Length: 269
Image (cartoon, rainbow, N blue to C red; front, side, top):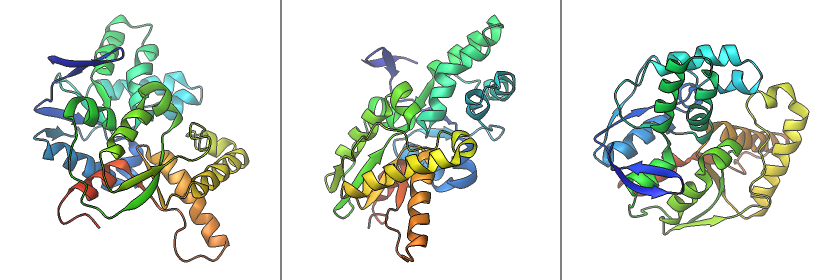
């Protein structure tokens, strides 16, 4: 891939004719609309999207839970799927960070597989990163005025810098006011298996996050990571249920769907 621009330590390619989509298991199983809207955003830019149907999980749950061998077996399946030298676009900074930064560690004892993991990692781009630095996303905002808060997952923020590119995309939308919640960099409490292993702690963390977002004046929350989005909006929905509210007090949307709806004629509300 011919390089076009350098941002920090990363060299970005020119806009390609083809990309792979690694959809993530959460998008595949629970948020297919976010995956479809990711495809639509890329196809509108003249890019052909290829989806290897044998893809599964990135292996992060096993890796972060202390099961490297299990994570290695999952990662090995993904190494086989992206044979062409095309970029791999991931609508999750958390999963993108796993493939880009941790696959090579999993195969440290196998030089051949480690080289494959490193080569794949160099082709992995989180969706908002790809839209900003490769596609140069710039479309008219056709939606009504709205106020939103942006939440970026811990992994996406620290490993992929997705908080910057997500914010940059929202800044291109003239009718969107982005408000910043207190302690914006703090975790939402999801943390993958953390929320399952430590539910009481997770609930306390996400309750603080929901309160911070509501106090910011945001009418909804936008995120590029479905795990965080489900955790935040799920906690808000539970609070609504306990308070007998029929209207969601904090709806949320994946940034792919948010961008598609606001920049596509006939979709914008």
